[in-house]
Amino acid sequence: PLRFTARDLVGNIAVIEKQVFFDPDAPRLVKYQFSPKRTKGAEQATLSVRATDATMLRKTAHFIAQIGEFRYAGYMTRSDAKGEYIGLFYIPQNVKGAIKLKDVTLSDYLGNTKTFDIRR
Image (cartoon, rainbow, N blue to C red; front, side):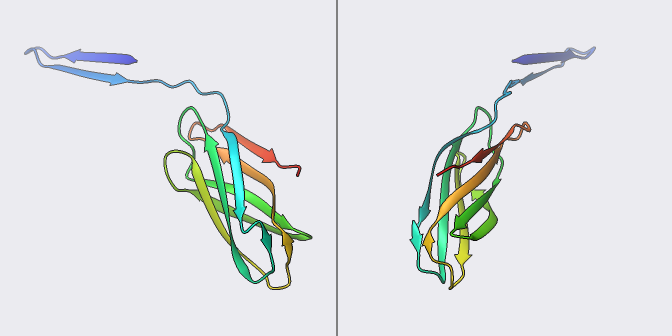
């Protein structure tokens, strides 16, 4: 920690301590899941993502989901400080099949960012 001390002529003392974090690494994607995993169309889907970082994850994360030829790009919101993101999106009536995550971009407040390209 950094410690700064200031004294004036009458003896008053002020002390400030600051912790400095060195975090050159981007966040890590731990796991993800869709609910439902398959769609019959005309329903809402939920994407849950768990991520970790040495400092603090940003409040939102971009993602792209795909069902057949249909692609949806949206944002998830971090639901707590432990790194869980939740994203909701509506699937059109004519779109059916397995819901797949194509990519997700995670960032921390120090500017470290990584896009995870999912190849499943």
